[in-house]
Image (cartoon, rainbow, N blue to C red; front, side, top):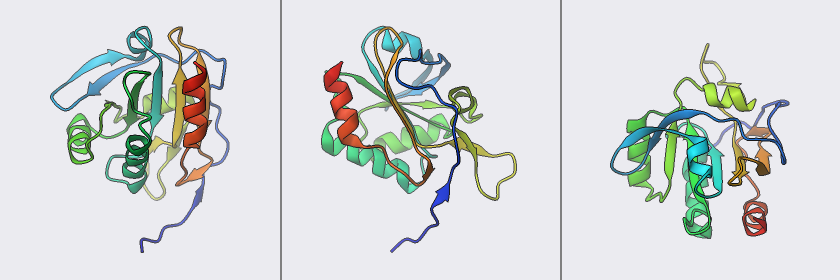
Length: 170
């Protein structure tokens, strides 16, 4: 059994339901290549479920993507599901292939997007290294956040039933 400490992440000043989603441009990775893409070009085509997760080697990232696949939340017929972490495009490509993820992942090694969303947190014992806290934002075609969840501790996971209900309500 893997043991770990639960870490309180403290308060976060993040966008909430009804706010406009902060836009950004980062490398968006799929199974074959990556290219710089802005979030706004994605939600103009269809609603986006944006998932902030720890670096790709951490168990919460694996668990999150496995749960989404099992629940079929990453179904591209309804929404576009995209992830975002501090991992490199190379690490994202490997995660997509090894976990059979049917989604694209934004690469943000500088963690600037998490800072923009108010959800950056410093990694324990690593001076100057931060990553996004677990968070989900469902964004409609106008760029408005229709459902927001941000973890208050590590590890934490969203309420997948609430995400499904928010997607159905779009």
